[in-house]
Length: 398
Image 1 (cartoon, helix red, strand yellow):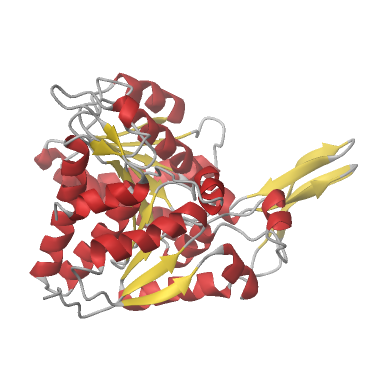
Image 2 (cartoon, helix red, strand yellow):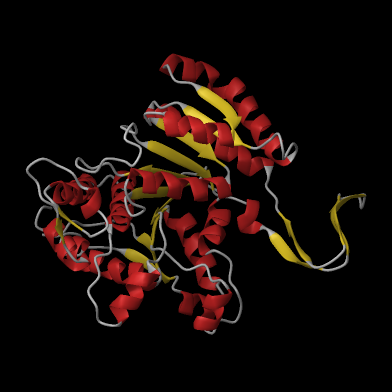
């Protein structure tokens, strides 16, 4: 008998090879065991173009309604993609749109497997990247400039203007303006402090306030005020520390560390550093990612792209050995949270068994090609499986 659900998950489908894996994961690992209920949104680039990206906004609003979503990897189109897909325009990142509406913090942590040693072997414990998920470059206004003066103008509600010169251009160039809000930064800070307390891990926060004295300085100030007023005593009682320092200093400290840290990053920093950390632990496809909003809304996703190179092989009829682990854990995380919120212990248990079966399969030596050169375990010889074979091997262990 299949496990029943009460409330639908918001299901956000995606693009290219991850879209193919998405359906296989459902067919092989979920639908045989769970009477799956979802409210489906197609965030593939074709549908986003057809709806002028309204489908992305609709999926985010549905997430606000139902509380839990699971998202496939999607394409953020560049000029080449606009031409390839004959798009009406160069749409913004769907993740950026969703995160702006949910106003949350993205927490990304590596999936640790016995037999896969990180490229930095001292990293024996997970490094959790806490990424602010609002504003900065993802909501920036940018454009081209020619000879002339680019200015930053702020007009208050009474009509008073403050004007600053960005640059006097003597030739062609580009300009970019970013923003953030104190409300969102405060939500980010509290989410990071609470996560660190729950995980009983020290929290390190980094910006570049020596260069961006007002913008990054505001992040530093807000974190310091909230820590002193709301969390200092709790951190001391838990025996963990909060540290602020410059991002280049944290990078050096992280490389020398044993892990076991929550590293809070601004939006762009978190995007870049989560990929660096994931790769250093073994593979971009071995990273969990969840967006948590201040109101307790959860959106689970894979922390990697759409695996374009494998998709082009797939559409030629070739077999691929694409790693689906991060996407599996997006589904298991969403099902687990849905089960917790709806008081469905069988659903929570299934999600836990799915994760254990995935790790057990790799530790038994059955894995996708990206993991084979990383895997070193006594008396176990790694065997490369194609994506569907790997999913079927997991299914036998659930």
